[in-house]
Amino acid sequence: MFDNRSRVSTKATLVIAVGVLCGSCASEGPQEPAPSPTPATTAPTSRPNWESMVTPVEPQIALLLKQQQVYMKTEGPGHRAKEFENLATRLMMNQIRHKEWSLLQVFSFLGMPDAGQVDEQGAVYIYYFDRFGSKDWFIMVSADGNRVNTIGVNAATELGAAKLQPYKDWSDVRISPVKQQIHQSR
Image 1: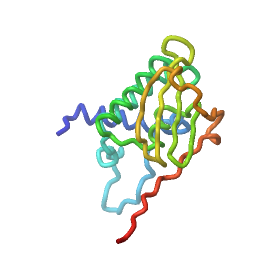
Image 2: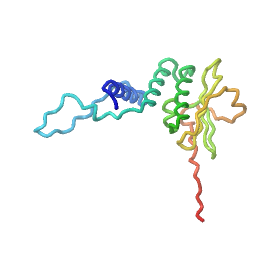
Image 3: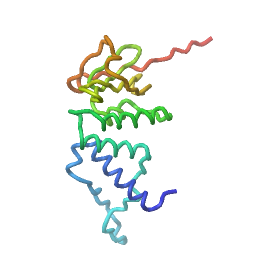
Image 4: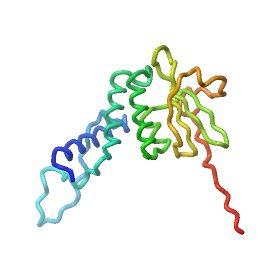
């Protein structure tokens, strides 16, 4: 199914993924696992067997991680523009193609939202970005608990008078309670 080149690429992507998703680990570089005790009759190997330790990354996740790196390198959370829109669009297209995202996955790719609204019906999270002006467009993520329902994009003028709570740090971000369906027995 995979040739050796794609395995190497997948390994590199996984190492990149770990570095991207774990910022504090990125500066330390890849860590070798602690050596396991070996019987006296077995000679220790000179390097770890990476083949047995690496779980292949889904191609769509690998592409998202690559796009996230481009966004972080060229723009970053302080200035969301074209690369942020490209990243969010890739997330949205995967959602349309029936890839289910958790809210935590979306947060790990897009970062902290700028604003949101949470109530008993669910939650909406807004990410503003520069398309033609300053924060003139937004990405909207709607969720029920940790399950993302939709990811969309629109002009900021379409928000109208929505009652959004601005987020200054992660402690402001709330996740909606999961809607419970009540089943009545007959």
